[in-house]
Image (cartoon, rainbow, N blue to C red; front, side, top):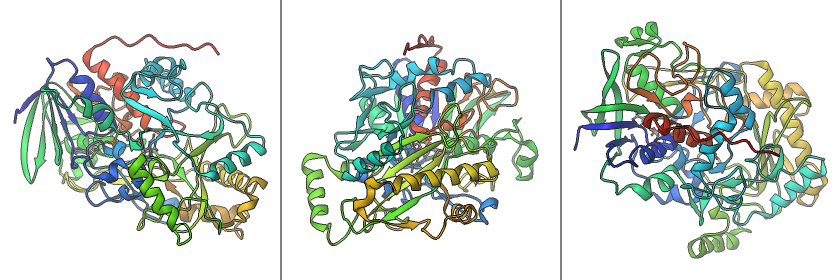
Length: 541
Ligand SMILES: Cc1cc2nc3c(=O)[nH]c(=O)nc-3n(C[C@H](O)[C@H](O)[C@H](O)COP(=O)(O)OP(=O)(O)OC[C@H]3O[C@@H](n4cnc5c(N)ncnc54)[C@H](O)[C@@H]3O)c2cc1C
């Protein structure tokens, strides 16, 4: 194996796959992509409906959980993260949403020159091959990542949308255009009934390149620094330590937990804390691991005797068998879907400049962590708090690179977060109890009809709130000197080292994070290669 590369990328998740493709495009650049997990050969990765089986998979997930959450009575919450080629893009829910346009204008307003919506829109377009909206000025049709509509949605979706519209909520014709507001079916990263991941979109088509080396089952343990420059890294392969040298740059794309963890293991972080763990401080950068936040969400779950929803039951058994055959023969039907077939964005208070809740509807009851397929019938709404005020931290528990980091999102520490969630629960209930749903004669399983006043709903939220797996900002990008990376994603104070993944988000965006991570990595590759930015796009409405 070569031990020297121009560019070394740590982590082959959503961002790592994009970077490996773009940086190795010029055959003169040698690139090494390193992934802790195995290759993505399991069929579970590729069949969309198998998503639930990946969350806590023994070999393809990290098995993280949060630290005890102070505002939730000490609860610890499971944190699924992909540990496989493709990272979370190989294990996620496949919903395609870019964020609210204002989110990126906010990023730019926080001193991140070059990151406004009109400046990042070309990168969203460049990454995308949108089957429905390819000709819209907001979309792309020639990019590597297929975005498609739901192939055949469950009948409950029409009921859900009719319920939302009957309450006066608008229909959103395209969630990824100027104004993501209102309800509709979602688009997703699914093509011909199979998951579109970072690997299938960005790596598979180019893995023959002679100048690209992909290492799996390889844990990056430390960046090697020499006089303020990242010159190489150490990695563990089957228990043995190996070293690689970088001629140009090392790019951390190990995600919102992995990237700060590698920085801290390398002596870059809060000096006092690193010293207390016996790690030699190489560079004081206090914000590494700070500013951590994620999207909290809470389920409203309805149970019904009607068997139209997805789910396993005796009555629905023949249909289930047909659905498997249908998928094997034609790659369509429920197995080609991800459960989350419709959604909406609304303001819980009039006058807000953008929606503060995403309502994710699933025509199925909740699967349990132990059994990833919904048993019985029903439907559920998951309101997601888009702009949480609470901030947590990711820290090291130990200098051992194999140890799990301490993941403390500090969920709902700010009272305002709780109050927005309560408003969202009430709005969800209104939709789920609209006359359009009458024929299902459903019963509210959770929170349960006995929980009506604010205090009992707060109790419910404390007991059941979880996140929707969008951790960000642990290596915050900023124009200020205290940020971890500058607006060109260079780690402050260290030469030859960048971070490009969800950890650099200056602040969380108002929706699912995968597409924005792809955008970050697309832009990062131009920055790394010194290519000019594309012309900003202004679309006249
Ligand atoms: C269950 C789940 C459902 C989701 N659903 C959606 C959705 O429907 N839509 C959406 O837009 N977003 C969704 N997301 C979020 C989205 O997938 C992530 O925001 C995105 O994938 C993050 O990309 P990343 O490159 O920052 O990190 P990751 O994709 O997590 O990649 C990091 C990679 O680095 C590897 N790594 C970490 N540490 C090391 C190390 N020391 N050495 C070597 N390799 C290392 C990891 O194994 C991983 O492969 C979901 C996420 C999850 C987990």
